[in-house]
Length: 301
Image (cartoon, rainbow, N blue to C red; front, side):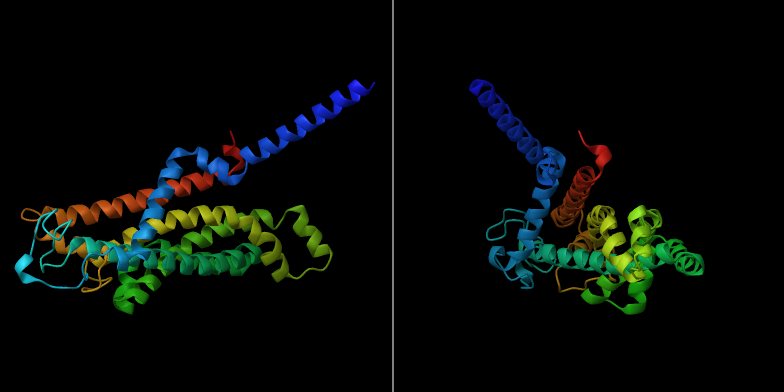
């Protein structure tokens, strides 16, 4: 009898251990880590952030220091690992500080566009009727412009500079966030728990922000991650066109612009800056795909 009890207790302990092990294996972090491409993307993003944060420490030279006697030096020249640009400025130093600028602009524009878009999407999806029609027609009007064209239009009106570039790209992101949130709100507002809250006398603001908004987090996080990569391309495009971050402030876009005119004599300037933009965008896209797989119950293995 005691042996059966003992065996029963052992089996219960083993069962509890299996449950704990399964829960650990299926938590968000472990599922994310099982996606090798997402881990690669996270490493890329981490390195990019470290480049920006530690730019003053890692930079071997002042990024704006001009030396006309050392223009267009090739990579691995003495004192210049990645060579120099058309004004003799150290390319490695400018790329490190350019990473900081790309991070600030991309994250700032994504947060700005996300906040405004989420609020408009919540109001539009929950209110419906005329309010929904008016907000969505405005969003459709913004959608009529290609994203980069809308950003160029806004930055032309607002002017160049870091804040104006963030504002232009952020406003360009608003319709996309609004659409994503609105579609989720229109489904969630008719769920039983929302109807129960209405019966209990909860206000519309409480229902929207305490019950509906948390249910849109997974879609918003995934889309925001992808938008950061898009914002990096937009900032680089605006700076390449001479409308974004202006020289002498280093930016991957204006470094690429500087290398445009010397592709035959100093191809390393455009090649390295363009490659960094490409790798950074790939990193954010890989992480976005990994987060989507973690948060989407249909993607469980």
